[in-house]
Length: 300
Ligand code: GLU
Image (cartoon, rainbow, N blue to C red; front, side):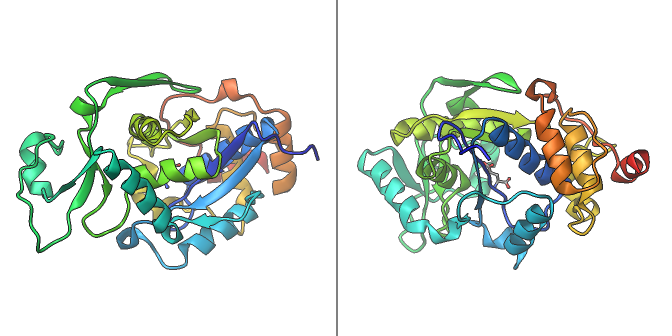
């Protein structure tokens, strides 16, 4: 095997909210293929910063399912829940620069503003409870060139507003943690589902504020059901089967626009997919995956 190139460090960052589903399998396979094609590293990070949505044991289940699909992190898997001191350090740096402020506004306070914080708090300071911490966003457009989606631009002040970095319940927000960790792990390339493309300008903004390097981005097409809904909305129906990985693996490769292969093992399927991998064939737009059952029949 050729030694990994430090010029490419990719990652797959699942939240342990349930079993690995088809949408996350696509993100895993897409990020793995792009990393391997660049002879880079592929790292798994568990994003467990939302206990209310998490399922006990889901992290281990996701890691073993990934292994059944032939994908194993090149470096030890980190858990975000164990890194709060690092996120607190980043927030303190922003506080020292007066880039963040405490906010006691509730969701219903923000309702008349379409959920977008108007930059001046509506709720008064309340010493009896913890505030959330928001970052001030600039009145400018943040744009980047996505390898799959093309040019993406967002006006943070108008479209997002001052956003939360630390929630009132004390947990750090995804936006801060992901930026701190991508930099700490020296990630160069973020490959993930297009449902996160709207988060990227916020992350680029935070990278700038924290003097961290900008990543390259590739947002993969989103898997929809036949009715056009996001697949992850009904995870149970589309959890992938670690005991029978080939049909879902082939479906994920087909979903990513890659030529179907008829290899009989996971390792051989991944090797063939990597051999024939053409990133230019990855479609940009959301679409429905080929049903696993049909695919199984077609290739058996
Ligand atoms: N943890 C996020 C999720 O599972 C992904 C974050 C990312 O790839 O940046 O949706």
